[in-house]
Image (cartoon, rainbow, N blue to C red; front, side, top):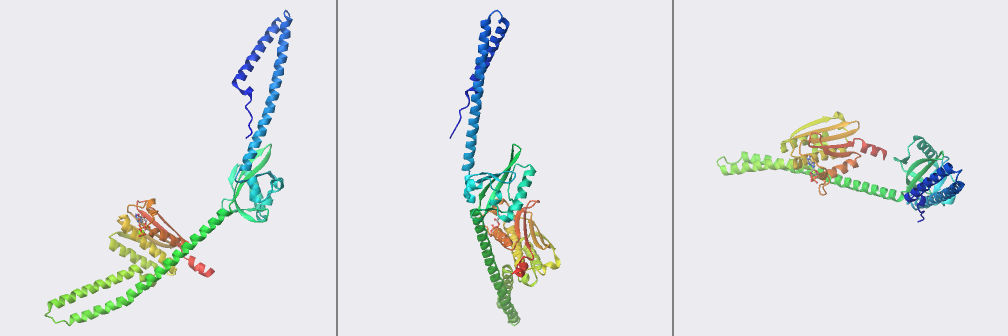
Length: 431
Ligand SMILES: Nc1ncnc2c1ncn2[C@@H]1O[C@H](COP(=O)(O)OP(=O)(O)OP(=O)(O)O)[C@@H](O)[C@H]1O
Ligand SMILES: [Mg+2]
């Protein structure tokens, strides 16, 4: 690397020597003036000393100017080296938006040699449809007085390659004034590869979400089918068996206590089997969700949970007739979210009270389940093997909604699921 030595005359020793010389010169001059008439040789010596001092001063000044020039050349060369070795493209434009600096990375990014770019308008590297807007942006930026800013915060910016191809870029702009002129420097990079991988990632996430939704739908259909069969087929057979047993018990010989006892036990067992079958069917899929709708099914679920878990539950329903026209997929997803939240409360929270809100407002279906238990920690939500909340979040995202689980202001856990009620219907209309 080129370097210039620090001037000797800037060292403390040189400054001290210079000051001592000037002091001695002053003394010689004063003595010469005071005794000039009596001793002309003194006057002569003073004049010679003055001439020598002025000569030396001129020499030092000339040398300093030359060294300063050299230093400035070296620092310019160093800056040019830095600019050229930068990984990002660097383009400086003047007020007329003509290019005055174009580094090596810019040559590669835009496929254009520096000699061709210098003096050209920046428009050359911006797709036609963005040129006017870009001009305005640069001018506005100059007027704001801000020195630097990221460009295109919300939208993707596009560059124009010399071969006519457009490519996405990421850029920042800075503004500086020199000699009364304004210069704008844009630092940018080609993000084609990054965008491609982002798009691929988004696509594969969407595919996974679709797949998970399909799997859940298939499970839901399967559960509904089994619940229907348990309820209709097995339920009816058990009821018929119960009626037959009652018929038999009425006709048993009255003296045989043992047989009567056995028949009584059979009756109790049958009762238990009927209620177990109902419970298993309801756990699989509450048929009232299909028959009566989400509001009733959710109320039944909350009441059943309060009874079984011994937790005080308060439920608010708001939305009235809007529940009637609810899409089946959304109703099922919200029902499952409520079921999972209540199961989590029973398994993890130790809560005494639960507050549930189910509402339809402004085209959004909202479910809020809050408990006064021990609360949920961030690391709980990241547990690898826990799938309940993750599944719910995926489901909500698939439906165009969202799910959040946070620590509630009064201590416990609050789950909030939202989904647009008309999302699926609109999609179907659009298709
Ligand atoms: N209401 C709650 N109160 C306290 N902690 C909770 C609550 N809900 C969830 N958690 C915590 O969050 C974790 C993740 O819950 P999640 O439902 O995803 O999984 P899980 O219940 O552990 O397992 P599963 O996959 O069977 O649902 C739980 O393990 C628990 O530590
Ligand atoms: Mg769970």
